[in-house]
Length: 220
Length: 220
DNA sequence: CTCACTTTGTGCTTACCTTCACAAGCGCAT
DNA sequence: ATGCGCTTGTGAAGGTAAGCACAAAGTGAG
Image 1 (cartoon, each protein chain N blue to C red):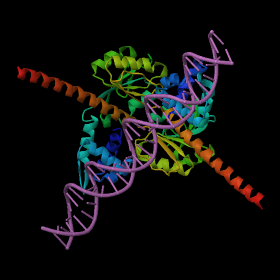
Image 2 (image 1 turned 120 degrees about the vertical axis):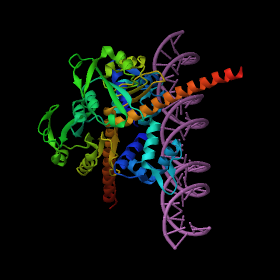
Image 3 (image 1 turned 135 degrees about the vertical axis):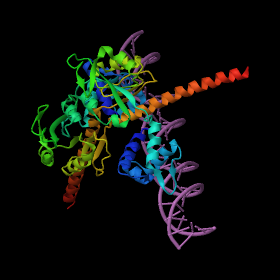
């Protein structure tokens, strides 16, 4: 389930606060979901709760981590070191959540060879070699959209089977490869859509009120 | 619908290629969705297609943009100028898609007053003032998780009604405020989950094959 | 030991979303 | 003018997920 990481984060915060036991109600509130949904999700992993008491935080953290495959560190390559790639390379949230950035790759000669966040930047030409040598199964694509598909194809050919795509393109991959995409413009456009509807709604309200007033006046 | 931006991007690419008419089948392939779904989504906006022919690309771009509220430029504020905030401020994809970054806000005195991507960085203390003066309705939060809720509350109080949250926290807001979140670790964890299952599946396969072999041997 | 209280795990209903399949409509060739 | 082929728009079926509501199960006090 795609909500497990959310629960895991909430559990981590609780553990940091020294909480040892949590009810589905509390955890659901912390994760922003319905409590029945949370219990159903957790029951899918097995019966790790105690009726009348709740869930043991540490034990649940372990079980959820295990289910998510986070008991080991996954080696990750970041391809494309523009502003976004840099930000991702420097983002501390990865290391603390079971991911180890093991390679940085770019095509720009001005960047290749320099050190970013403690890692040497490798040239795109050596992509396959780096992926194979370092046993990388998960890749992050933060290149321009034009080259994203080509990079993707090469990653897949080199054995990568999970890709996180920040480029605004639809990537086509074999069905045994998992792709998730993050598109910031797209998210903003969805917000604009709702914003637009709010404005339209309030305009309609004003029009409606105006018409009511008119009707009153005419009715007199 | 949350897929309209996806269609819009595909349509933009087609328009750039000089394509004037497109069938639902082609557009669906370009956007990576089912053609029936696409037709139903578009029919919700009205009947803008011609049977036997398809959709006029330019006209459809206009209609979708209108529905998304992208015929005007939305002013946006970015709060938090760490690596990610910088990347967002420099991202060209916003301006070309109907968004104008009008303000950058941070709490770090070392950054306040400097210029990033052609805009002066304002101090967090002046957040409300900037939002009101520049008529900002959409905000991007790229601060550390600890201060995200506080920043969010202040934004809402200042009149912002749509928020794109990059901080790994669940924000609580009044129900008339729309929040969308982008959490990169979360996406990676979902990938790790699938990766994990692939490994588990292939291990199971090996075990199963081994058992088969054993059964054969024993059967002899 | 028993009873009252708490919280999990889950059967069932409801709502939504996806997809198939086809009638209706349009253009073009003859 | 007529018929053929293509594509849209949509009714209906199927599937999936959400949430209510309650039985089962555990705790602790008296």
